[in-house]
View 1 (tube, rainbow, N blue to C red):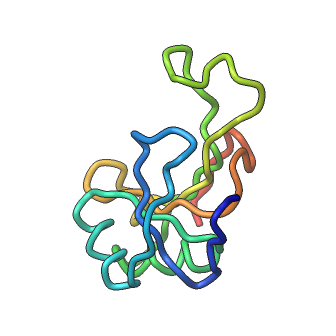
View 2 (view 1 turned 90 degrees about the vertical axis):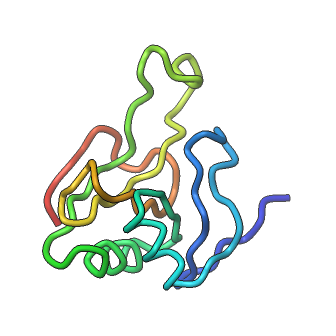
Length: 114
């Protein structure tokens, strides 16, 4: 049975664990430190994700929808997209981690500044 993820809460996120990316519950402060340190987190709610991203790096957070699998990815031949939408704090793809949220396959390939 899938574990319930609660709005307003944060969880470890490991992109190296396909279909099991969402890990244990962590505090908001732990989530801030993880993302500042270049690691990823998950929260069910878009509003919590954008709020955390803006707290990591003041200013706008760059939003991206789910990524379509690349040809070399584990799920390239799978039916449907298995990725999560996410924010990049301050639009910085290199320094900070991702703040993932919501459901898999949301708005595949779309991006905008939030």
